[in-house]
Length: 407
Image (cartoon, rainbow, N blue to C red; front, side, top):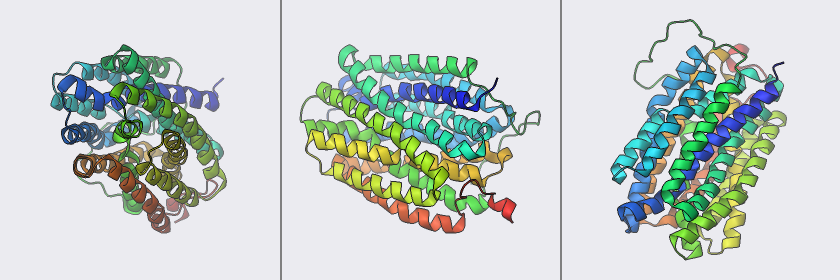
């Protein structure tokens, strides 16, 4: 008998393994650039860290609406399988490319073939009873943060013991396992809304979002503040620890493991809060708390304090994505939800690209710690932006009807 709870569990497992596979590779990239290509200059290294992040986010930006639209026509499960399988084949290639420019090219391809987050969230949003949707989406979203942080742990340990290249290869193995789960265990009990209709490729250009314009701009801003510090955290660990790359990777992994537990808790806690309290207020509290913890990291010189501050930030920030996605889910029609989730990912990718550009410039000219202080300030400002977006598109409370239905 079909159970939406079991389906949420298997979607969580697939997404967790996929994100863990990705995240095993990306935290070791700064040290891979130093070891493989001899980029010992902090300015050059930070430039290429930002470039590789930029390339992947550009792929997300361009292709996410396409895959979101395809999910509405061909099925969300098929998009999950496609995304996992393509990443399982492409990620190991990053270990063998002969230069950082080609590494950025492979990262672009991985981003272009992505879309697992969109498909997973859309499947859960459309197959979960509305009264449990916030909790379910919060749980699934926690897989992203938990997988990211678990990947940091595994990637650091694997790279330290078996070599940096192994982190890319083992990441591909986890993505293969995620592919098998998505093929055999995930079910799509609700048919795609446009099944059987002729699929047409959307015309290029900026779509008209109408009443969702403010929310989409908010997604851009959220993507920026979430991504700004992430590629540079291993470098901050190295600055705090004051030792070689191997030791920094080890502590980066240990901190990531501790923060993973905080991310799991935050996803569930803030997903539950959105089911029981006004979601815009939850988002504002998350932004203020996460931003304060991120600013503290910019001035940290103690490893125990870095533990505490990173865990606190991840606890808050892990709830930000599910709150925004629940907002979008409760205000869009089911037949357009996949496409709007795709647009939302593209908007976040714009923010990620901006974050990469800031990282290439600010990281190179003003230092790593500046990025953490700037990111924290921008995250606190997010709370004010949420307040004004809520005025344009109110966050439905307790699953009330959409704005279109009210009109």
